[in-house]
Image 1 (cartoon, rainbow, N blue to C red):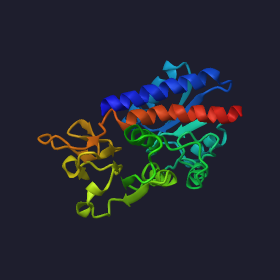
Image 2: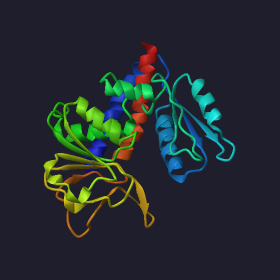
Image 3: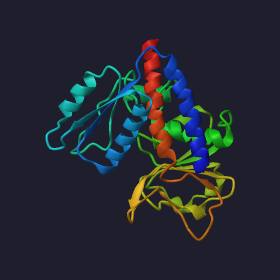
Image 4: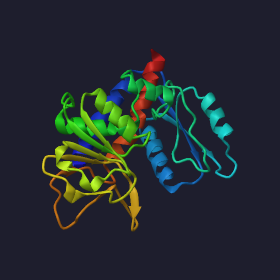
Length: 270
């Protein structure tokens, strides 16, 4: 699966470079972080590196965990003139401001999500778009209709918007969460299983079957190693195609931050 991810990445990057070359509006991004979350540092560093490699502006605003208030974040959001994101998680009960779609590069705001529900969206949450790319690569861009897809996880940033986008594409979607009886599910009924719970071992590789596509969105640290939500039985070769962690969905998610920034620049250009 790593080769598949690499192919998708290089193809999407080449397309984005072509779009950037003909844009008159600048492609730029502001990232806001609060505190010193180690995982956030990695994600932000990867985004900044990608923009730097293409000669694009990526501003990084770092705020102290001890003194930052919700008003501070809201003021930054109110003054945003181009693509901006507030790196999650935010500490101390702080919440990412509800951004207008014109600057919402993550696609997490109520305006962008409302457009998604109505099928009017141009900006998908980046992990959702990454997941759609992988499914399209496996089954074909025009073959979503009728696909049986299980989405395990109900977060506002992956599970819910992914289920809606799949419904928009006429897939048959089943939604599960941490309260679902996952042990009793007949997983072989599904063409695709997307696992996005943030809990290692919620499902095991031996539960899947030949011909299935398993997209592991989770990222967890276990015994000093980065792993996904799917627990792999190292003694049994998995029959299904399972995306790797790291180097799978996360790599494409980072690329789609750039992709969404390009879309917002295109909209600003008109």
